[in-house]
Image (cartoon, rainbow, N blue to C red):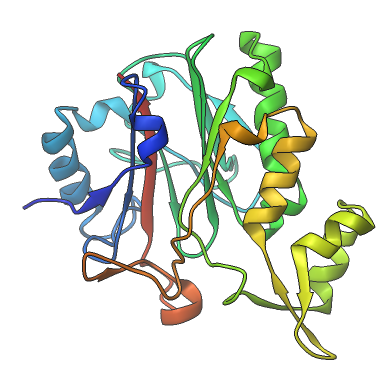
Length: 255
């Protein structure tokens, strides 16, 4: 069995980083899912990496980011995570430790500081984006490892695009508490009296820029989880399928 995955070319081109995201070819990545162990074992064989060298988030749409080491290896992969201690982002400065998040329309954000050799993997849904989890990640990388935003390379992975993501007034108002009026004009497009189209990628990008990441170091995607296909495969989209379990694995590792 082979896992079908794709990479973020700008990060992998450094020769120091391995990134990936999966499609609906492989959809079970939460510990509770019946085939998740089988999938992680298969992925590990392809990467030459045991599941003990993988760690996964316990996602609850928070802005909590956790620093992990090899001592955390297997968390969420070989053993369940504590429901009471959620975190939607992972940071490490250790090599050969695969940081994993899962998405089904939300935004995966990959961070790499080549100067300090630190990586992060972040799950940024609309709630995490409102709470500016990318800003929290940058601050934590700076505080704990001395990283400078101007040295960071950040990639935004596949997610639901601005043409497909319809939201209501409640979401608009939440964002208006965190983003100023000029930013809101870039993030939202009014569809009708009741609905807006939300550009999550732009919201994450604005947060990165505001925190000092150079625009040329931010790598965007045109792959939409709702409507795009890659080599004949669709991507996991809760909006499209309403599946509570189908998820896309997104991951980063220093090699």
